[in-house]
Amino acid sequence: MIYRFYKNSTGWFVDLPNYPFSKAHLAMVKGADVLLEQLAEGKNEVWFEASTQPIPEYTDVLDRVKKLGITKGAIYKGNLIKINHKILEENNLWLYPVTLFVFQRYPKKIYYKKVQI
Image 1 (cartoon, rainbow, N blue to C red):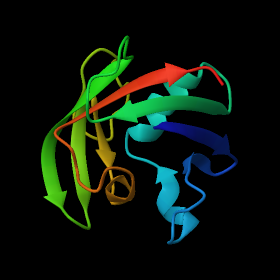
Image 2 (spheres, rainbow, N blue to C red):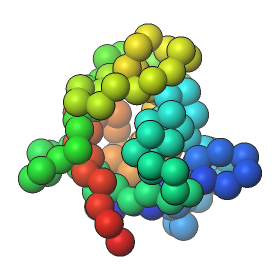
Image 3 (tube, one colour):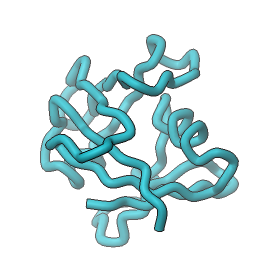
Image 4 (cartoon, one colour):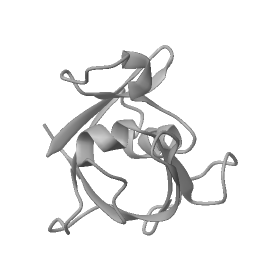
């Protein structure tokens, strides 16, 4: 699937029009926002193909480091791109329960590829 991420005056968000809960849950925080900022290269929008299976010419793969619980999310570690922040351990980011809406679980691996739309 291809997903749009956008930045407004309050931060980065994933665009999921059919998400049934509060749009506040779509905010990208604790490292995910930092990664998006790096990959957006100064733009306020970036698109990704994301999958639990390898994608040809993927940008990076996030490996699950720790599950925090069904309602608390999971910690993932990037492999190819260094996530420059001091919020979590170096190169880690937190993905929260909206991940369940996208993948129906906290997958062991999330492959993503930056795409041009």
